[in-house]
Structure formats: structure tokens, C-alpha cells
Amino acid sequence: MEAVQSWVSEHKLTTIGALWAAGIGASLLGYSCTKSPMKPSLRLIHARMHSQALTLAVLSGAAGYHYYEKRCLQPKPVADNTPATDVTQIFMLNVLGAGDISVCLSYK
Image (cartoon, rainbow, N blue to C red; front, side, top):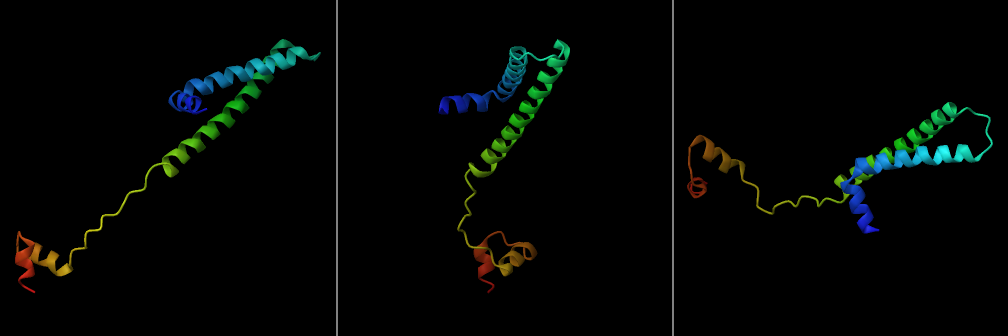
């Protein structure tokens, strides 16, 4: 199952195109098995409509899965535990031009 998921994840457009073609084929096969009074051109139009509905459903599912992959499966950023710089230290660095923080700390 995991091999199929990885292949589908890598070949999304191929998968969607294959599902579209399978939808048309299944719909045409379903219409040809019944004794319907429809013309072949009308059968083809209906098959295309069914296939488009299937394709839209698959595209919606693929978009949802893509969002889920990006949003939920990626690791969340970890905050660093360094202490925040004091406002006085920032002032000393910017105004007095002290390059070393130890110089700024001596002014306290």
C-alpha cells in the first residue's frame, strides 16, 4: 500500500489522467451493456460528464491531501532557548557603538 501511495504522490497528473480515462471507459461500458435508446454521441457526452465529475472529485481529494501533507506532516519549527536581549543592551550597542556586549554590560 505504501508503494502505491509513493508512486501516486510522485505521479499525480498521470494518476488523474488514468482515472479520467478509466471513468470514460467504465461509463461507456456501462451504457453499452444496457439497452438504452441513446445515440452513441449522446453516450459519449454522458461518459465525458461522468468522467469529469470523477476527475474533479479526485482533484479535490488530491488538493486536500497535499494541504494535509504540507500542514500536518512537516515538523514544526523549534524555538531556540537563548535569552532575549535586554533593551538597554540594544541601546548601548546602537547608540554607543559598542561592538562587544561585555562593554555594554559594564555601563549598568
